[in-house]
Amino acid sequence: MENFYYEQPVPIDFGVDKIKELPQILEKFNFKKGLLISAPSMIRNGIANEIKDASNGKIAAIFSDIQSNPTVQNTDDCVKALIENNCDFAIALGGGSILDCAKVACFVATTSYTTEVYFTKQQPISHKGLPMIAIPTTAGTASEITNVSVLTDTKRGIKGPLASEFLYPIYALVDPKLTLSCPQQVTASSGLDVLAHSLEAFYGKKHQPYTDLVAEYAAKLVFENILVAYHAPDNIEARTNMCLASVTAGMAFNLTQTAAAHACSYPLTQNFGVPHGEACALTLPTFWRLNSIGKEAKRLDAFSRRLGFEDAKDLADQIDELKKEMKMCLTIEDAGVKTEDDLNLLIANSFAPNMQNNPVEISPELLENLYKSISSVHSNN
Image (tube, helix red, strand yellow):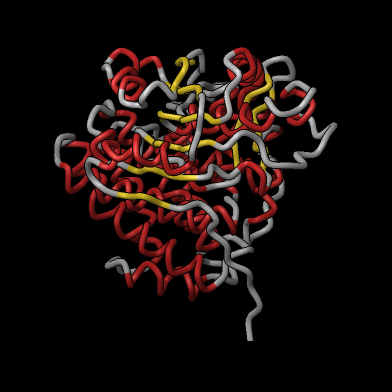
């Protein structure tokens, strides 16, 4: 009998117009004074101020100085705002970047150290921080229910994850209406991130029965809804299904962790500026094909057929078609990898710890061949 452990400690409050229930949720927790951590776009479209106004005076200030790949410095600035406003809670409203930054800031604000100390593992994350309600505005990272935050240390030129049981938000409020304002390319990139979470959770070494179930359901939702959400952004049914896919995929990869496609995505984003989900999707079909001829072949073929594909190769081909239709990177050259030096940099920086979670062992030599297989030079031959 298989042994496994499954956990999902974050309450998930899901549905259209759920955001209207936030004042009652704040009352339930008996919070006194909080910081709304949000994106500049949420301030521009008025949603952040609506939430602040509806908080019955509980939200003292709004902090929005966070980049699309949040930095250690952004996190420290957020910590400063939490401390200066004497906050006993935070609300994070935004995409994965906002949620990731806020989760770490809420912890660091209760310590005497800076974010760098935890990012570089000089100190462990050893206790719960300020309680945080997470409200996602994209269907992508599922950061609202996971214990992971991805930050960038600009001083060292490193992008990587911080994970701890103490980084979970205390509540996830998921309202698909908040994703209606997502630009088309964000819808595409974040949606492909959901697909990467699903597929990597399924084939990753740490998969287990419950994560397999939710990973498959999430992948099915993405394949059925991503193009509708992309082409008809006001379609609330497709937006709702993509939000459901995102949260469901989070229930899988939070425990299995991600694998090779995510490991490769970090330098594609950090060194070449490719948006995170698009960076994951660049190699995702390649790793699905590679893993489908290894020891996971039967599982991946069966999974692919249950989703309506002929086999694993057919599923991988469909991801390439999705990328083409949504104008995502198709080759390493599209991603800015133009020279031998670029390729060497990409290979050297692709070996984050989650590379070890891939069922087929990835060596630098194999990775070079895989990258070359998705170069325009190769595809023109």
